[in-house]
Image 1 (tube, helix red, strand yellow):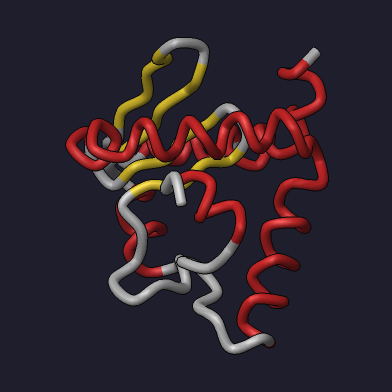
Image 2 (cartoon, one colour; image 1 turned 180 degrees about the vertical axis):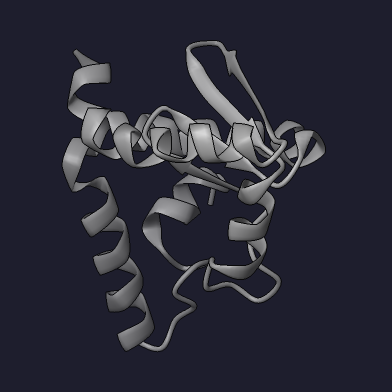
Length: 124
């Protein structure tokens, strides 16, 4: 049931799988989660994520996108928290995450580090 509830967010991540493979990246399943890295995933995380320096990894449902294998290995525990959040929030995860960032930013906080979803993932 958790996979079904998170499916809309997972589908966003699944769109990247053929693009990553076609651009020389890699895909594997680790404990029920699809991990992709390299190729266009590296470019997207470096250039299209609105964080200074980009992101090393990102979760979309049951898909974790990393710049490379080392980034996936280093961020696996953090990203698994986001997988559980996606299971909890289902199709509302992406809007809830973005709204939380906007509220935090409006209140003068850091839209990433002070976001409650990130605080949970960092164990704070």
